[in-house]
Amino acid sequence: MSKFMNYAIQLAQMVDGQTGVNPPVGSVVVKDGRIVGIGAHLRKGDKHAEVQALDMAQSEAKGATIYVSLEPCTHHGSTPPCVDKIIEAGIQKVIYAVKDTTLISKGDDILKNAGIEVEFQYNAVAAQLYQDFFTAKRNGIPELTVKVSASLDGKQATDDGESKWITNKDVKKDVYQLRHSHDAVLTGRKTIEADDPLYTTRIADGKHPIRVILSKSGKLDFGQQLFHDNASPIWIYTENKNLTVDNSNVTIIYMEQCEIKSILKDLYHKGIGKLLVEAGPEITSEFLQSDHLDHLVLYFAPKIIGGSGKNQFFQTDQIISLPDTTQFEIVNSTLIHQNIKLVLRKK
Image 1 (cartoon, helix red, strand yellow):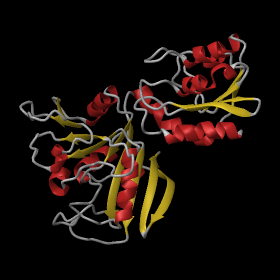
Image 2 (cartoon, one colour):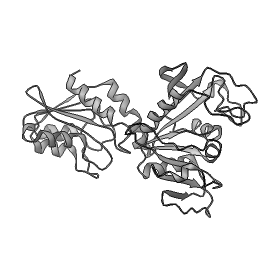
Image 3 (tube, helix red, strand yellow):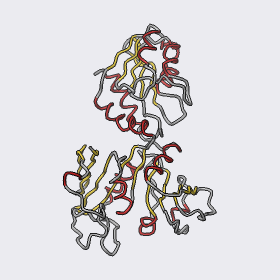
Image 4 (cartoon, one colour):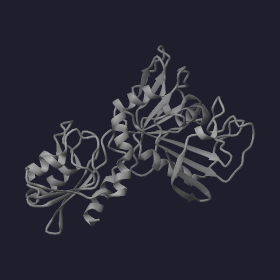
């Protein structure tokens, strides 16, 4: 694998989580063995990575090779097709790491018909970066991750509701990074009441996710600190058509039924490409049973809490037989100062 392709993929990884419903893409223009242009798609509606790189390369793009982490787009959206810009710039060769399975027309054919050499160099790291994006785009639903911090016996809190510092402060810092890589974080009314959280990143130059609250009843205490923090917008999904609030940072979205798929569809329509769920057992359990779950991130503290299990992070009304249980594969595991982080993908 070319080092230039690796650079393009690294650029894509750096902007992962800040492009909304668009894919994170990196691009590098090379001429005579020298980088003459680099680019990354920075956010939805901005220039695509190839355009950024070609704008930097300017006249040196003529006769050059462009490396792209994802097959160049062929459709007119908020920006023109990247294949048109590549042809116009006089690029001699295009090398990309992942085929875009959501494209209607084939970029290879368009570029080859324009006399440009095209090479597909499959890269497993890049493929993993786009796997969930393709599914999200086809379904019109955000990439969905559920995050849980719990004791070894799966408790998010004691039976008395005590939950502060089950996991350690280093886990909290890692969660800030997790929020930074998502467009929005979703929680429920009960979690806000119990923890009075802010759901910001609190890291240097961190991107604060949009705060999404699911409250069917709409019985919210607008005196809590979340509603006095303007770091990012707050969207409330509710079935209470009479719910109002005098706060320009808060948007109330009324639904006849606050059903998960409908909420996910609406969030995607509003530009949310990556959604993180940080909630109590009730909402966590709903999303863990959802057909749309992509990842589960578990932080385990080396503690056993015991009790009745009413704050167990996964709960169902009926017994699930072993053959019907939700299956995961472990993507990676990390030790964070005696706490364990498990990243799992739903099979």
